[in-house]
Length: 302
Image 1 (cartoon, helix red, strand yellow):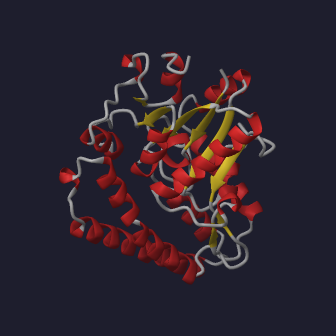
Image 2: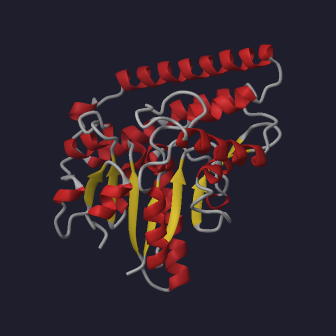
């Protein structure tokens, strides 16, 4: 049966978060070395303030993580992070960090980032420079999904839809294969704008991603005249609501990082069973895998 398969982007389609990659391309686009140095210092201030705000919020929030055993408590905490995200986004916009960059440039940056990433050695950690590596098996998984007649989508709090489109161009050459709910960086001022389908609301939190996912489900139901089964892939706590909303949620975890995955820890703390795909049983709604090859190899989607 054909399904709606939706992916988070950062850390799911890609092996790592890409916000710093966006920043490095923005910095390198500033003419002189002096201007680039100023942009680099500006970005460091933005990141440092975000890290400090996040740490302060986490420290002061009650109940603490270890005491949050109910789903409603965890969702309330995730939504409370909106204030931290809003403050950081406001700094990015007010400083004009992404100003004067057009969508065509962002799409080109995405293509270039993937090209650089594919040229890196296998042991590259994926956390420096302007390189992006797509997670193993993604292209093959997409090809098989298309052959089955599945619909594909991306839901992401990434700031640049055009950058995302550049990265996945080999899988979506005409920008028509994936339905997308992703923010945009507007030219010329560098303001952030959310998806048109969500009224331009900037996506920042787990609840925003769920709203984006829901708009896809409603659209599919309206077009098909019936409910299409859904699958969601995600790697972070911002994917929590989408993973639980889907008919099947697949948690993506980097190899060797099962013990470090905040998403896996959160799901298990809340009482959800999340076995590896190789241990999945019929009727299970949540599993985890390190890449798309594992998902295909274990035939977890039938």
